[in-house]
Image 1 (cartoon, rainbow, N blue to C red):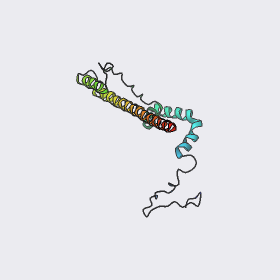
Image 2: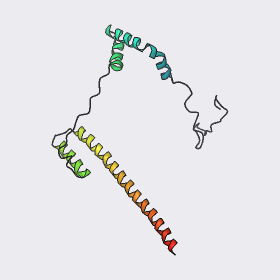
Image 3: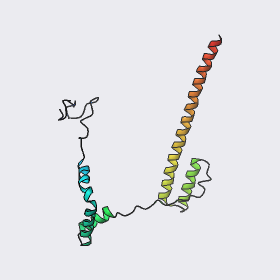
Image 4: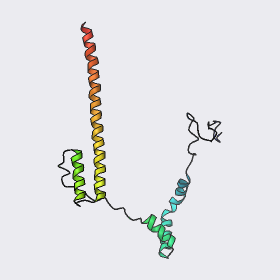
Length: 158
């Protein structure tokens, strides 16, 4: 039984929830510990940052680490621009992939950049395939509806 209600949650002999049960008691109501801590610290945020910097400048190694990691983290590098010769002119996805592989082989782009471009091409080809399947399915469904309508019209003539 739970503290909030008289609901018994069915479990097997190992204590696992049984299929079809309510799924467990869920997350406890109220704020998490992290949310509680944030709520308590927020009003004094500027003061705490100032003290952290003060101790870091005084030589406290832990405060230096904290200040560098949390207050002034290293910026993540932006992704590089990749220019692949022949990519824009390629007509098919396989031609585009070949252009990327050729650019990597020729040293025009890095292997990591080539991998990223190939992953994007893979996602693009999946989206194109999905669009094509949706278009075909819509055409099939439209064809079925037209046949049903045409069939009903022919029966009205008899």
